[in-house]
Amino acid sequence: MLVDTHIHLADDAYLDILDEVIEEARGRFKSIIVSGVDYKTSLDAIRLAERYDFLYASIGLHPQEVTKLENLAWIKELAKHEKVIAIGEIGLDYYWDEQYKDFQKELFIKQIKIANELDLPVVVHSRSAHQDTFDILKTHKTKGVLHCYSGSVELAREYTKLGYYIGIGGVVTFKNAKTIKEVVSDIDLKYLLTETDGPYLTPHPYRGKVNRPIYIEYVISEIAKLKNKTKNEIEEKIYNNYLELFGGTNEEI
Ligand SMILES: [Zn+2]
Image 1 (cartoon, rainbow, N blue to C red):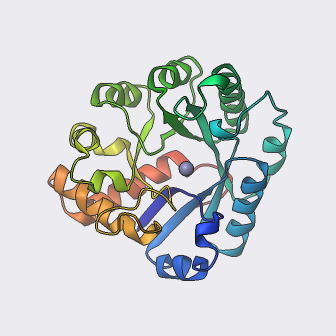
Image 2 (spheres, rainbow, N blue to C red; image 1 turned 30 degrees about the vertical axis):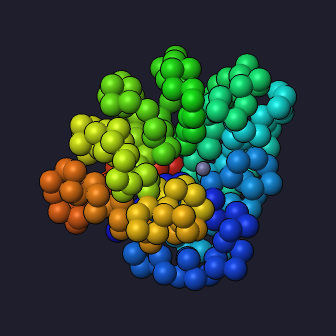
């Protein structure tokens, strides 16, 4: 069974194709985690998860949404919902928002604390902020996944030493994506997870189109190739990893 640990299904890109995208994944997927980036999209993610049995929600405030310090009481409130199984996406993004670094860090740490309090894993976004993200996740120990990991092999090793998982998406299928291919080859399979990050980062040969969970088949193929294992072996192992990280939470999965 496949798992998609990160997708923005409430995004407008899916408006006209949502049922089709979900139905084509039915029976093939054990779980698809719909991610919010703020209060509204977190609520949207929960609403979607209510409609489909194999959809779950991840709620939180994305670093790109941070322009001031905010009251995060809504996260604890929404997390009471039985289909909320993670806090995310949260993290640091200096690519878009260099000026709000301190707010980003503070809100990231606050959300890690909330996740720990609720015993939920975190789904972490890190862009152009690899060292700071690592430092925070080292100091404020929690459990979680580095979604759409884009750092170095060395850093990935450090993360796995701390027990964090590495999220692998469509980028690994791109011909020139040398580093992430190296990461997949190097890192123990027990730390890898699969995701779309849809609607973005669609794998080859659909690059440029709206991403769909079903395209994770291509990510699995690439991981199998890099690991010199069968697709079934990869799929099974990644599903186990998923259970390890997200299993013992609100919902019996
Ligand atoms: Zn995302």
